[in-house]
Image (cartoon, rainbow, N blue to C red):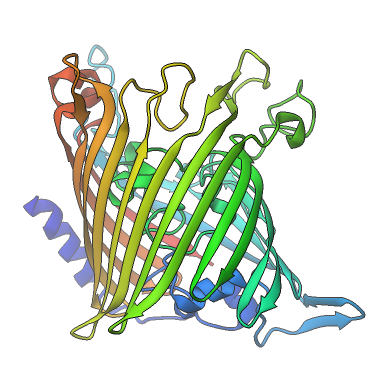
Length: 447
């Protein structure tokens, strides 16, 4: 522990005198605004203005010129951005193949670079017209799940209020990807740390929704209504992501998403109020129904490589964002549960007992706009029977720190320790394979 804290202090101190610069990724180019205009403390966390930008379907323009004509209003340029991750990760996992000395895994420590275990993605999108926008992420190299796209079509129905539809597809963000505004991990994009860690060690400690596995492949349509006081998202979706149907791994299916059906339902409602200068957000989530779920994406999708799976889970979450002694502070809490189903495989809980988790995290801007420190706690139930009818506990604590080398370059160090009966001798094989302790030093770059 002391070694980790020393490394964190060294990272922060070494970068303390690097000058702050304005970031110019995709939407910064379109609006002419700094990244900090939309993000709370650091990307990808949203502030009130960032929520308004999403509610307006990415259509807001700034200094960038437009091509205007009869029923035409688009930016002069197609805006794009790149994202890369690089870093180092180490767990306390044992050698994967003890019979072969020298075999390396994350227990030996792993370096990753953009396109080789690290992410290398291209974003493009922005304004389509006054009521529609677009955003897509294409994973060029690296993790195969980094591809998503959505096209919000939201019409103004009252002052600062919009409603409409959002078609979307994603390989890893789940049904909530269509439209989400809280920073609780309700959608994996928006949470205190976007560094997942080996087997999701970090994100599952921050967010109960991510612990039960709702961040997964999904394609569908979201019906959305949103204003500054809250939003409602009603989504019909299928558990298939980009490339799972036409043009991808599926060569024998119907050739359309509708052929697979949109039989799963996601319902989200959240509200925002001001309490003594603190911005308070609370919400609920519900997943229900069942849908086709690809189980092996390395081969063409057929009846033997896919199954109808249940999608049942619920969650409640909340956040507080404000200033304490002139320091920005964010506090985030979530509780999620996924029932066991003895008759149908539940995508969010394949086990025999209920899977659930309560998570709480907090982040303080120790150098406002530059550096943060944070911590998270998870009290989880794995859904696995310990053999005596008890639910094996899967708990964790996490410490993290971030530093902005510039508004579009974020360094972070995260350290998570898992504990509970899930990690004891009853699951010794799992402990040996993954390790109960994970440390990740990561550098996000957007350009």
